[in-house]
Amino acid sequence: MQSPMLSSAVALLMLIFVVATTLWALETFILAPRRLGALCRRLQSAPCSLQDVREAQSAPLWLSAVRQASTYSLTAAILIVFFWHLDVDFASFLVLATLLSGVFWGLDLLFLKRRRARLLAALPADLVLPSDLRQELLAEPALVEYGHSFFPVLVIVFVVRSFLAEPFTIPSGSMLPSLQIGDYIIVSKYAYGLRNPITGTLWWSLGRPQRGDIMVFRYPENPHVDFIKRVVGLPGDHIVFDEGNLYINGHLQSRRLLLQIPQIDPWQQYFDEDLGGVHHIIRQEVGRYIAGHHWQVDVPADSYFMMGDNRDNSRDSRFWGFLPDRLIVGKAVFIWMHKDPGLHLPTLSRDAMLNSKQILEKRDVVVSP
Image (cartoon, rainbow, N blue to C red; front, side, top):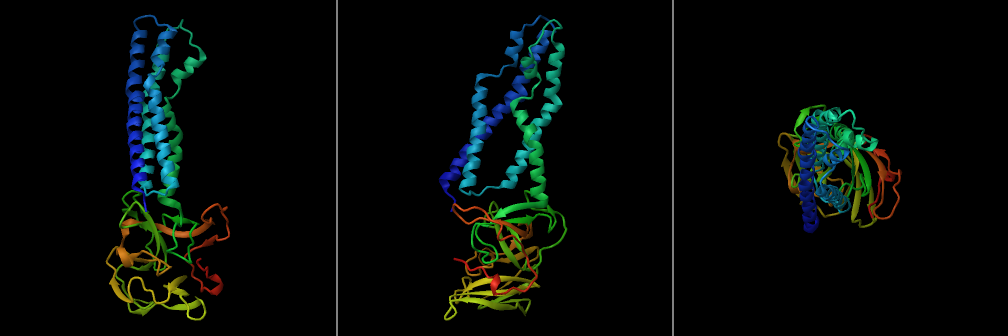
């Protein structure tokens, strides 16, 4: 559960960051150019000394504190979010960071860089500037330098993450045994089409989710959280569940018992289930049926019915309803690394393609602890 105290701390840090960065931008794009403009006008009417140039170039004393507040508050907020796994809308944050860095760099290219060049051109011919002062006059302000440095990187990250592929980690056992806690997966962002990275609106369709796909989506009850489940019901499907047997549009979805533990009087069973030709292993606890022994649903248009492979330990569409199309993030396609919780080194032992078409056997079962 997310800690209200940590969430409040992050909110306070972000408020400090916004205020400090606003003051920093005010100094960079308004106050500093005014000082340089005043110096240029003075140079055109009266002699000027090196001391005058240095004073016009020097930043106010409060700017150092503002820079530190902006940098340290953002760093602290990111560390808290990362280490305590707080729920944040990373897509919106990435869009905002990319936009701001581009705006800062663009404003300098359009206005400030020319103003700095005019200042040097206006200096008297007999006024010899030291090389360090000349470099200071021509150099980008610190805020612009950050924007210049980060903007190309952020654009690449934004494009790749929003439209091509994105890495995710598996935090819970709801998809056992297919996905284990600590699996690192790659999600294809273009498998179902190109979408608005913030609202999820479909821009260009390249395919539709298929029954059996493992899909990452925004949790309908809290869109800031990403969930991963398997697509069981497509738009228009009629789904019936009867004590472990799953019927879709009147057809029983076949499943074959692979393993039960213990062999006599078992309490958990593993089945090879076939959903539209996609074979996968599901885990069920004998006689538990967390959503009831019997239930049925009709999937509305532009929505999907999602279920976890760990059928009796998954919070899915049986509890929060149908998944709207606009909340789809992408299709899970590959496990590229695994790291057990705690002080363990990552391994490549579970590297595998997901959404298998082959028939599974007992040796493919990964028994959860």
